[in-house]
Length: 124
Image 1 (cartoon, rainbow, N blue to C red):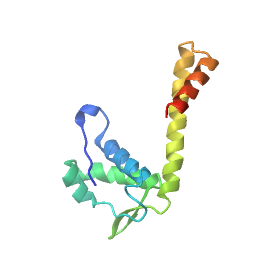
Image 2: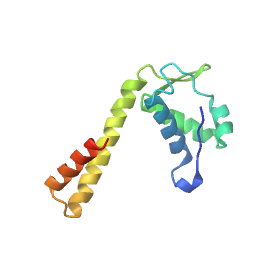
Image 3: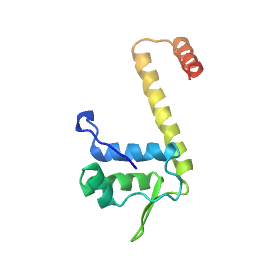
Image 4: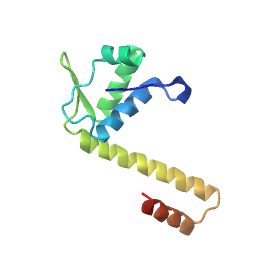
């Protein structure tokens, strides 16, 4: 598993690690049951602290994407695909809501927004 972090992004390292692992799970590159590197190993690979990786793993576990087994390690959860899909739908909903609010604040009417949305769907 190849992960990179960048201080220039302004996003906390734990969140960069968390997002990259979640994206790999969503894309199917890390199927259910796949063992993730140990906290210490991944921290050494990514050149961040153990605390950073621990926090990323804890957040992934809270999201239902991974499970930790004491003494055995951390694994992609059997329910990861379902949890991942639900999280993705929430993220998309949040992004669309923010876009609509911004457009409304700038005076863009509903019919223009609908047309833009339809164009975006067609351009997929």
